[in-house]
Image (cartoon, rainbow, N blue to C red; front, side, top):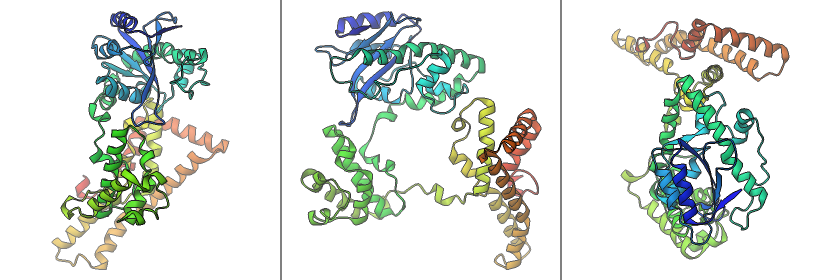
Length: 440
């Protein structure tokens, strides 16, 4: 088992790797005590079936430069193969100012080859390479030297089995003609913006339960200070203050150190010194924010009056379509799209038509008989949808053997009959029956 510890060795290996169609790559790192990941090990393997051309690269070795590795990552003639590449790419971007290209992520590819969403490496090793991976070394301290033989064996397996997985998925994509789908997903991973964290936008990742502009203005300033402080000192955000403490501060809006001392969630170290001063300045800046400059929260969900029955039915149909096509559900339609369909668009269109017709006839649009006309129009569809969803929920949530058999027979019949499948999809989308003019 070869470990590279010098720049010359690394340059020779990377030069040979660049002559091949692809190279598999993985990294081991630590991040518990730092903002940026600390790279502790790099694993590489060229095409083949043995471990002879697979190596471990020790970035902590005295005097080694990883520039030959960064040059290989930028070489457009060799595909760089990773599994769940995001954190690895973040390290290459920040440490070497390079994003590996061309890129192939086996986790992404597996999503369009029938393996589901976010499938783990061990699962692909078991299903494709017919091997098992010893996971006992996964959470060890990769910065300690010397590495144990168990650590080395575990680390190398992350790139040796990856070769067979890559070749299988590459061939599957050629057969099912879904390579473009993978490319679209990888575009996010290969964008520098994915790894550039602007403190001014850090507030967007903080989960809050209110869209109050003044509250969000304080959240924005507190998140901005925390992000900048953590980046500058290379410490985790949580070591400055956690999200729950941040939202507490945005609610209580402390004005001085005495107010700050009353916080229930703030770490002791954050109640004094630079962090305390930064918190008070951030709160003051948020409170002084002009109305036209306050951030706007995501009100999409608030505006959507989602019909839960329709949303459940759409998810059932999406799951069936996902399983039959071998494509992960989120690649077909994200949850937000389903909620949009379930937000009563047909109800809105029907109401618009009833009110418009009433106005054209000179009727009072607020009269009870006008609204009753709308209710009569939609009553049957709503009741039918509720009944259908209830039946679907019972079928798909029960472990009763008889119900499971009925469900399987029904789903099989639907998948085998394209016309029936299309009718169900149109019904779920509200495109059947007595349609309002806006939906025709």
